[in-house]
Image 1 (spheres, rainbow, N blue to C red):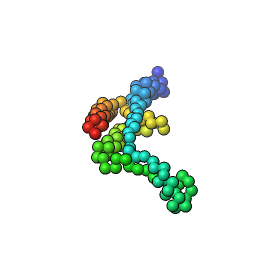
Image 2 (tube, rainbow, N blue to C red):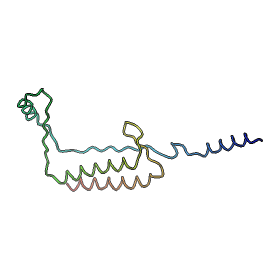
Image 3 (cartoon, rainbow, N blue to C red):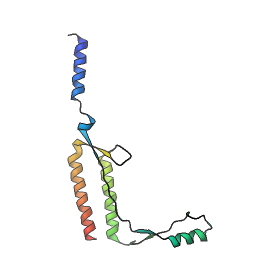
Image 4 (cartoon, rainbow, N blue to C red):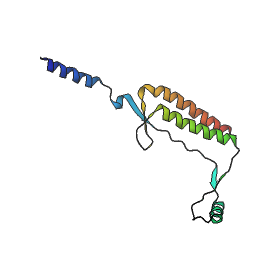
Length: 127
């Protein structure tokens, strides 16, 4: 065996032992929908457009149905916090919403997301 054979053998062995993307990570996704408490006021939108001599569809007036509701505000802020935590603990993967989570971070991610989900449902039930 010459030096070249030894180099090829070591290089091949390193390649076999290297972790793959599939063995060192997983794809995760967070899907959250929440009611934002807004409703389009078509009559007010039409009135604003007419008063300002604008083209139809240029102005859009939305009413905040529960503008001073602290419970709804807390839920909305928590949903934002969940999305932010998910984005900070993962890496972009695709445009469909899937993100890459290193397997080494799985238990931390699972703990954080479970706690945040529990808090979300606590906020919903208490409102």
